Amino acid sequence: MQLSEGHGDKSAGGYLVAIEEHPSDFVTRTAVNGKCLHVSESTGFRTEAEYCVDVELGQLMVKAIGRLGHQEIVTLPVTSITDIYTIDDGQDCFPVPLMKSLSTEEKAGLFLIEYALDHGAGSEHADICLVEASRSARDELLQCL
Image (cartoon, rainbow, N blue to C red):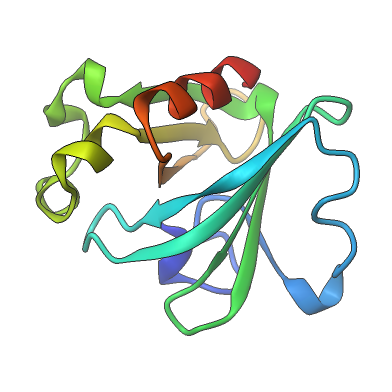
C-alpha cells in the first residue's frame, strides 16, 4: 500500500486528504519536519515528500505527490505504529522491486513504517516507505516516533 498508488481513499494506508481542503494544516505545530523520498514498495516509483512529526498531537504527517499528480497527505497517530523496519533489519523486510530501485546510499536512509488503520484488535495494517537523506537523518527522525 503506497501513497503514490491512490488518492482520496485508504489505499495509501493512511487517511488521504487533498491539500486544497486543508492548506494551512500541514506545518502548524511541528516539532520535527523535513524532506525525504516516498517510494512505492511494489514498483520503486518515487516522489519527493515532506514529513512532520507533531509531538503535541502525537502524529506523523507525510505529504507527497501521488501517481496521478495530486498532492496527498497521510496522517497517522504515532500510537498506531506497530513496527518500523530499516535496512539494518535485513533486505528481506523490503520487496525486491523496491530494493532494486534504490542506490546503496538511499538504502542507508530507507525505512518502512507499518501501522494499524484502527486501534481495535485484529485491525488492518498498512505501511509507508520513506527514504531519508542519510542513516543519521533517518535515525534522528525515528527517535521522534
